[in-house]
Length: 225
Length: 348
Ligand SMILES: [Zn+2]
Image (cartoon, rainbow over all chains, first blue to last red; front, top):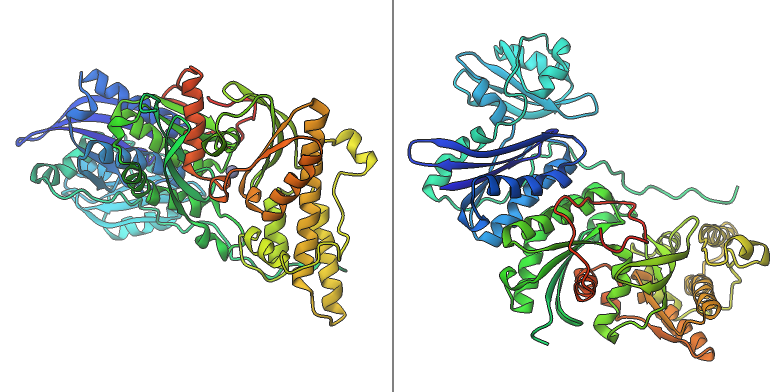
């Protein structure tokens, strides 16, 4: 089954085509551009490009997998709306996967690991995974020091992800180089059971983790002195 | 008519998620989802709240539009989407959605200017627009006077507000009078029972000294402050505020400035058609005053019905249809959402 994967939860804008079979998940085509300010410009051309690379047409797709974040909202929505609208046109199911899972799961190798991406405002989006790559805490958003303390409590011995690189000093954990951003093949792998089973299509709701910045209107200031 | 292209339009520049479908100048569907109630307690549109609402609304709104028109995405000839101006995050949801539809359905995409779409929507009601025409676009987000010489290629800005948008002034005065948000409809309603000549509120940028530099520009900030002073003075004196009279007098001042400048532009350029669009164009007094004043000069005023004046997907589809008919090339798939898209750019 040919499956489209998109993720726009980090500065890496990713589109990929994977083949999901009974035995596993194999990458067919992959495009990734790191540019925190151009998700809207980059993603659709990349989807077009991976289809062309694999000599496929949209109607050949059997499902779409999207990274649900957490991630900076404006960019994150690009991937989710792209997946949702394409799924609607093609009448194929869409599945969501926590984007941090596609960093933490492949990084786990026997011991707990902290996966983190940049949440801006001097904070991290993060989650902790056990030695088998299962998420045990998170996703959460907090200051790097808070994430570091929780990770240590949970026995994490290593950190991974763009956020871990950025705040390596505060986290004070060895940083694994790869994956720095959500891995498209892993996103598909984590949805593979649902894809093979033909599970019902999922509503792609972003993992915002933060409320919108807005303050309710207060009393008006008088103009007369 | 069946040979004319079938165009879909997507609008998400502010707080309305709109999907419209037209064939030529014929409106087939105009589906809308609004997040206006979520913004009411903030007294204005909160960009992040609007963006979240667009993401949730786009797929169901598209479904409703397709059902209403009795077509599928496979039948569509081109997809038009507002690429600006507007709220950056809100625009981006619509642009990304349009691209998703375009890629999956393998259709051309047109990124279009929201303000030009406010002009184009009138063709759905009154047929092809004579060019050149003057357009007055007034809403909560914009107040502009434009020369429409070629709607497919570019319009020429003549003037715009130098401070608040006209719709913003309605919102602020409504709040002052204890009326709900958005302020346009309740002020229009209250004003019907009031005396528009009872209070002489200022007409911004109409004095001879201002006209030299700001002949076609607007200013509503001074008016808003004048209303606030007048109301506060009554309140401090322990008098009841005559809400209907204040609403009527304020509305009269806004409409007076808008119509006199728009008609001055028509007369100066010898243009016989004035199109009015944007949410404030739904104001009943603005419509009546424009028609009454234009008649004297033999100018024809075209105002679409209120539902087409406020932001919607049909206006974007109407402009898309106009661009396709004019042979304009589609946009590239990497077209941006541009919150400050200039008026001179009709399609990106
Ligand atoms: Zn508008």
